[in-house]
Amino acid sequence: MTVYESDIPGVGRKFELELDDGSRAVVLHHHDGRREVFCRPDPESDSEQIFDLPAEQARRLGSILTGAHFESVDAADLSVPLGDAIIEWVDVPADSPLVGETVPGANVRGETGATVVALQRGTDTFTNPGADVPLEPADVLVALGTRAQQRSLARLVEGVTEFGDSTAGSAGGPTGGEAEATAGESADSADE
Amino acid sequence: MAPTDLLFEAGVVFAVLAVGGAVADRYDQPVIPGYIVAGVVVGPNVPQVFSYSFVLVETREFIDLLAELGIVFLLFCIGLEFNLDRLAAGRDRLLGAGAIDVGINGAVGVACGFALGFSGLESLFLAGIVAVSSSALVTETLVDLGWIADPESETILGLLVFEDVAVAVYLSVVTAVAVGGTGGGDVGSIAGVDAVWVTLALSVGVLGALVALSVWGTPLLDRYLRTDSNEQFLVRVVAAAVGVAGLALVLGVSEAAVAFFLGTAFGTTEHAQRIERAITSERDLYAAVFFFAIGLETDPALVADVLEPLAALAAVTAASKLVSGYWGGRMYGLSERRSRRVAVAMVPRGEFSLVIAALAARPDAGLANGDTIAALAVGYVLVTGVLGTVLADSSEGLERRFFAASADEG
Figure 1: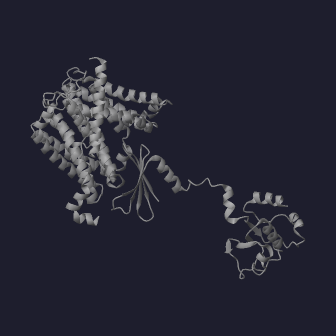
Figure 2: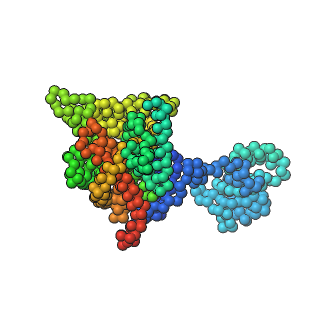
């Protein structure tokens, strides 16, 4: 995408953007802040004016176009779509009882409540791994679930015998990296 | 005259300008003709109606001063916005198209001058008046009609830049020849050398110094303008522009050309945009007074006397501009349709023609037909200014009517 710039004496500055469909967007910045936006569908056509905006409106429109305008979304709102659930990456160790099993075969969801949404093996990613994907050592499970469900999943993968939730803390969190490492760790201990 | 009267006259001047501008705006016409007519209407030359004189403005000194400031700021701003990159970018095509533009229209102008019975020098003045399009009117048309976003605008703006330089050089030469030749400047003949050559050499020296300033003097000018105070900034800019231009005029060198080259020098500094912001309103105000003063000086009776040559001149040179503009557009590789637009856009003449006319009318220019040329120029600017605007506005309709076949393919 090429941008052509040129000075218009006594008026301001002109910018021309070559667009993928062969048309051109032409923006004229007047010295007084006014902005005109034109579109020229092809080299032989005449430019059609699309906008003629005063400075403030032009800036507002520009920030919407760059996506900067709504940047100030509250970070707390981001977790809303998932509810209390978080996503964690869980390593499958070589001695895991799940090696050789499949995700549906081991009834992971029924046992732990967590949903395995993907499986990473080296550079490959299997989304929603089914009965045709037996787990191998060094696989990474990408799991969606609450913190309790994630802990339960981690124990299942590690092969830790269930003595009850009270001892779970000592087993530590999941061995793999976490999507939100710091929040995850501190929240884990606070949960106990 | 008591200062109270002076202030009142100044008030009348600006009030009339405001009305003239509003009327022009109301009829979608450029303001320059509006300002000129405003000057004519209240000037000393207006015929008495019902034995009542409408003459409201009699004192010339202060108007002449403000008008002179208008010329200086006008040319200074054009120099400030002068775009060397544009000149350099399209070098080959622009030199060709520009040479055609200035060459054809200048030659036609000289021929018209001789045909009207003017002397060689007077014909040279007429050539300048008809050859140079109005940057202000042309740019306004481009923006108003949205042509500014189309490829032909590059050609048109390039031609305007070429004309800027051409007119600056032209002004310094004709000023030296006309004013220097009659000893109008303070420099007389030295040791038997003709005064014209002394003034010419002086012009070359001054302009050369200014070009050197714009090439090597940028840090100096940057330091000169370094201040946080907007007020001091403006005062310094005005001091430089008016000071240098005024000094040039004393030496018999064209103040307009000097203002232009000084503007280009300031255009190379980091302050260029700030200067523009600071000085635009001064320029608009004093330029308006300049156009008003031109009108004031114009005797409508004299314009009426030259109506026939005026019509012929306008017709011939509008046609020659159409030809040179179209040719220039084709040289830029534009389609026929876009080249026709270049042709139409270049028709209006304006501020440069009037600056040249003001020079021709100066008593120390010593032209026998100076007043006639000035009257001709004023009428000419009014006609071509309006003609150009009307042509451009109706170009789409004309296009469909006369070039239906090629319009379809475009």
